Amino acid sequence: MASAANLTQTLIKATTKTGRFQKGISGNPGGRPKKSVEVKDLLTTATVPAIQLLIDTMKNADVKHEVRVRCAETILDRSLGKSVQPIDASVVTNSFDWKDITTEDIRKLVELNESDTSGNNSRS
Image (cartoon, rainbow, N blue to C red):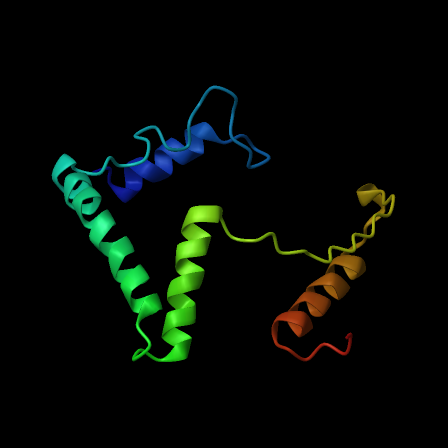
């Protein structure tokens, strides 16, 4: 496993001055760790019993209604995929020339951000 210092050096080499990754250089050269074959086999053998447990629990009238509904949701989510959730994304764009920003503008932005994160903002 890479040390923190090696990881930091790799990220420094992989990024440009703007903070973006350079073309052709990975920020994660080792890639995602592979699951061991034993773990993968174990999980694969547990799949059918896990599905059967969900089905049996969903059909069992002695189990709480909420639990049965959750089993049904899990089965549907895994077999059909979760339903699409609409997002209200109102985006306002302005043409702003960042060259014109002043120190006072930055101070006001910092104050606004601090009030937003502390929950004391007056906007709704």
